[in-house]
Image (tube, rainbow, N blue to C red):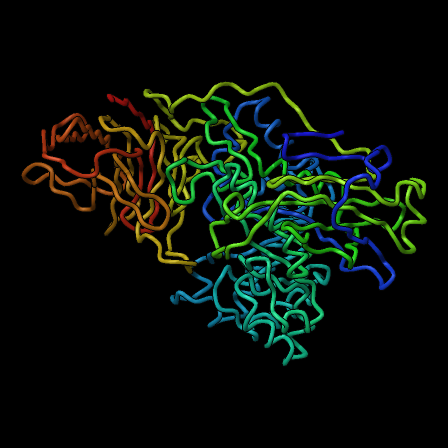
Length: 598
C-alpha cells in the first residue's frame, strides 16, 4: 500500500481483499460501449510571472531534490520559457511534453503597437525562430505552441502560424488555441475548415470543470490549459484533487495544466504560494513538498499519457467523483475523490454549493477489457468505505514510487547583510544574478569590454523597447531582492548610464508592490542631474549611490557626498530593496550591497 496521509491512499487491486462486504451504491466500470478519450497528462506552467525564478539559486543537493519531486515521476507536461528548467525536466523525464505560450512579445513584433496581430507574418516568424532557437541552442524540441495568453485570438494569424510552421519543416509542432474561454474559439473552429485543420487542441483557462456543446462538436482534444492558481495548503490540494477528476468527468478534458509549477518567488509578490510545491528560500535551502504534489502523484504515478479513460466514469451518488483508465494491455487505475465544497475551493471560477457525505461504494469490473487484467474474476468486484475529503487510487500498477529525501534545512529569513559584485568567469550557469527577481525588464550578467578597470563584470538591464504586454505593465524596469518585511535599510550600488541624452538609473528601498505595478522609495540619478552648482552627472561614467532609510527619515549619498539627509519619509513602511531604470534602456550595475538595520 502506497500511502501519504490518512486522506490520500493507493491500493493495489490484486491484493485488495474488501470484496463486496460493504453495503452501498454500485458502480459499473465497463467498456461494452467502447472506451473514452485518451489521457494526455497532467502538467504545470513555469513562467507568466517568473514563478520559478529562485529555484536555480538553490545549492545542491536541495535543488536536485526539488527537481526530482517536480519531474522525476509526477509531471508530464511543462509550459514555460526557462531553458534551464526545461532541460532539467527532460533529464528526469525524457518523454515530457514541452509547450510554449506567449504572454508578452518583444516590442519590435508589434512595430510600435501593443498588438501582435497587426503584422502576423512577423509574429509567426518570431514564434518559429523561438522554436528553432530551443533546438539549436538548448537541444529542446517544442511540441505545442499557443497563441496569446488569455487575449483575443486572430484566425488569420493562427492559419499563418500553421503555414509558417509547416513551411519551416515543423509539421510536428501542434497549435493550441486559444488559451482563454471556450467561446468564441469553438464556434469559429466549427465554421472555418482551414482554422479547424490548423488547430490541434482547444485549450481553455479556468473552465470550472465544464465545457460547452460547441467545443465537443469540434471533435478536437480539449485541455484545461491553465487551471488551479490556488494557495497550496490543504484546501488548494482539495481544489487540485477535485478538478483533476472532474475536468474529465464533467468536461471531457484530457489534460489539466496548473499555474504554477513551483512557488519559487518571493512570498509577498502577487499570487504567493500558488505553486504545486514551495521553494522560495535558496539562501536557507528550505523547501516544502505541499499537498498538491501528492495529489498529482495519485494519477501520474499510476498512469501515463496514452492510457484511455473508460466511458463509465462519473459522480458518486453522495458526492465526489471517480475516473478509471486502462493501458489496454492489462492494467487498470481508478482514482476517487470525495472533496467537500469548503475543502476544495479554487481561486476561480466561483464554486456552487454541493454536499458530500460518507458512503460505501462497490465497483464492478465488466466488459471485454477485464479479460486482459492481471487478476482473477474473484477480484472483479470490490468495495470501499469512503469518508469525506479523501483521495484513493486503486491500481494494478506496481512501480509507483513515493519519492523521499531527508528533511530540508529549516526556514530562515533573507540575510541582513548581502553583497554581490557580479563577477563571474566564463559562461555562468545562469544569466541572472542570484536572488534578484525581475519585475519588468531583464537584468543579466555582462562583460564590459570597454572598461579594463574594476567594472569588467557587471549586471546589465538589456531590454530597450517596451514589450507587447499581456496586461498593464510598468513603464520602467525594476528587479527586487531581499525581505518584504525590511524597514530600516542601507542599499549601495555602483551605476552606469549608457543612454547619452535621456534616461536614468535608481536604487530603491521599501518596495512594497511587485508584478505589473510597483511602489517604492527610490534614489534616482537621471541625465542630466545637477549635483553642485555647475556639476552634472554624465552618461558613461560610474557613480556610487547609497540610500539609507531609518524610521521616517531617508538620506542619500553620491560618490560619498551627501545629497540630502533626514528627508521625511512616511510611506511605504517596509519592503524589498531594488535596482532599476527610468525607462527601457541599457544600464549597468556593480558592487551591490545591503545592510538591513531592522
